[in-house]
Amino acid sequence: MVACELAVDRCPGMQMFVKDIMRKAVCVEPDVTLAVAARRLKELNIGCMPVCSGTQVLGMLTDRDIAMRAVADGRSAETMTVREAMSVGALYCFEHDTVQTAETLMKNAHVRRLVVLDHRRRIAGIVSITDLSGQSFAAPSVRNRRISNGSRE
Image (cartoon, rainbow, N blue to C red):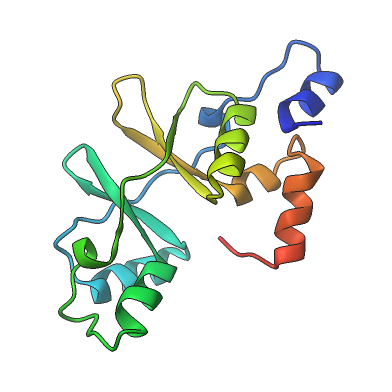
């Protein structure tokens, strides 16, 4: 049984939308150094940031990107830019999509986060597997996966 079906079973006619659970997205610019981006991730206690140029989303930068593309290769975070380490492109959903749609997108693409766009295709927020698992309507498979993986967002 999927997340929204659980909520609908308890409250007929009720659907949860991504806009109801998304968080504000904190973007990083592509020409910022990884050191600056890493400090921002740490200060905000988050694991990723969309990489944006104006209103256009260019990709995502995760703490893993920094570790694998800079630190593990012996490159300096003080000179390497976000553009050099980011994952190009970003999977997205819309703020008016159902939570079930977001969960399905994450599951099918094997990702933990989605950029959320508004109806004009501008960034509106971000939603993560943690956002889904923290809700009472989340499917047991999502909650169990977070617990068994010991993951942190």
